Length: 429
Image: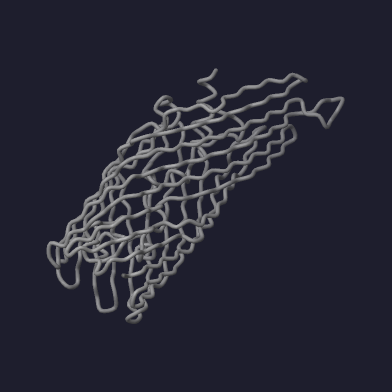
């Protein structure tokens, strides 16, 4: 019985964490970096930016002075919808989750020593919090459900770039990555009524689920940069698979059933189970065309397929199986004046899960994004401000809001939309 309850608890959590898996399923989805956050995350050949700690450490070698920069998605508002989820009494209902986030995404400090530039960085490439409330009523059943969840990915590490010549540099970095996923769900279901007392249900179910996953891992990066001529730059960066160092998972599950004046309680109270969260091998090649009016940037990324169990002790619950996937990012930088630059870009970020056939849980979403903003350069300061939009269409394996084990053949349409503002600032010493 204990194993069944643990499995049920984990299954509920992983099927709501569709936005908590962007790190290994839709990688580099949200804006990250300095100027890169406004040029659709095109940074692999963007010379001289602090954002090189994330996009290509070889580019750090061309930072002209020691500096500190910060950027953040100061406002993200998104809407996540699952259509036609099976509900009680053969009904179908839409599920809506909404979220608001305000969190810095990068803090980078760089120090220059001759031809070498070293950096310390704190990066948050993925941070989302979301919640939903649903109310379903039929002639026989009433269901009330609230769900809240939060996922985040924190990178802390050191990077460095060495300028071998004015046209060629190499770099490397090492980051400690902490992944956190918090989940809370409450479901109340009333079934039927007593004939002699219409206000009293025949059966009442109360279900509470609370859980947290926390993992830590190491991941290294290496990059090279080469300026072909005054007009063309090329960069290459590889990020290694993450090597997990620790994990901690706590779950609390409680279910109370009251039927025909009898009470039944099932519960699982703080129980630790093993958990895993891995980032796959990822490689990006980037190009920059440098013209009189500005830059045109293009990045192509390839993420390797990867297989692992989110909960190793329960391999049938949530097995992540991603496939080789290519992402595309196109950005531009227009020099409006010596101090003001207009930035923008588009990106296509397909799901690394290409099909849900044969899987017991999961969500597949392909995202399209648009970025735009401006960047203002002063003598010792830099400020950027912009907006971005990302939207997806996809599908998920779905079931009813109360039933524990899902119909693995059921598919629901998923649509996510997010709108945000991006602010970046930097100081040169």
